[in-house]
Length: 330
Image 1 (cartoon, rainbow, N blue to C red):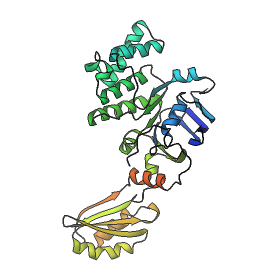
Image 2 (tube, rainbow, N blue to C red):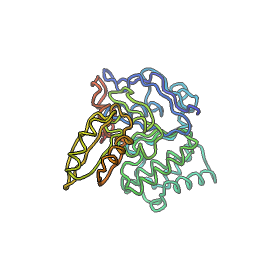
Image 3 (tube, helix red, strand yellow):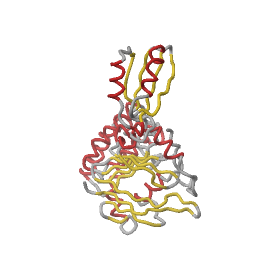
C-alpha cells in the first residue's frame, strides 16, 4: 500500500497553547481513516496543516510526495478539502459556485462542464442547482462543499464532518460514496459520529490534548472496550440465580453482572483481558439445561473506548479555543 499522506512530528502551537503535539502517522491509498477526538483535541488543526491552510510550528506533512510547506500549490492540487462549516459564497447559485471552483482548478470548456456534472450527480444536487447557496438547508450546503472537494478527482480527500446536517438517507448516500471513492484514494474523515467509523473507516486514530493516543482498525479499537467478548444472557430470575455462581467459576471469566428489565434478568459475563469465553459459557448453559430467552456475544462499543482513552489522558496546555471543533458526542 502506497503512503499518500505522511506526518512526522507534526506540531502546532498558538502562542503558549499547544494544539497539536508531535503527531506522526501515515495514510495509504485505499484507506479511509477516521480521525477522532473530543472538542479541542487538535483534529481540525491537524487537517488544516495537511491541507496547507496552517503552517506547522514543527515537523512535516508530506502529501503525494510533496512537502506541504515547501510545495503548497502541488499539495493543494492533489487534495480535496471539505473544511468545517463548508464555507462557500452564499450569493452564488450552486451551479455558478461549482463552475467557479472548476475554473480555479484549471478546467474549461467541455471538460469543465463534465467535471461539474459528475460532482452534481455524485452528491445529488440537481434539485438545488439554480438556487443561491445562502437559501439552502445545512444539509445541502454540506453537500455543495463535498461536491467542490471531489470535483477535480483528487488523490487525497480530507473531510471535516462530511455528514454533518444530513438526514439518515443522505448520510447513507455519502457513506456509500466515500467507500466507493476510497478504492484509489486516501481519505481522512474527522467525525464525532462513532457509528460512522464502523460504517466506512478501515482505520481510526484517537487524539486528545493534541496527542495521538490510539491507532488501529475499528476492530482493534473495539477489542479495547471493557465489554468486548462479554456474553449476555437473558433468562428468568430463578434460572439466572442458579446459573450465575457456575458462570463465575468458569476459567476465563472475570465477573458476572446482573440486571433486570421488564421482568427479565440479564447476566453479563465479562471475560478476563477481553478473551473469548462464548464457547465455554454456551457449553455450560447447555450442560445445565438452562432455558434462555437470548444469548449473544457483545463486541463492545467505540463509545466506551473513546471515553476511556480520552478521559484517562491528563489534560495539558492544548488549545481548546483555537481548534474550532464541535464536541465529540460519545
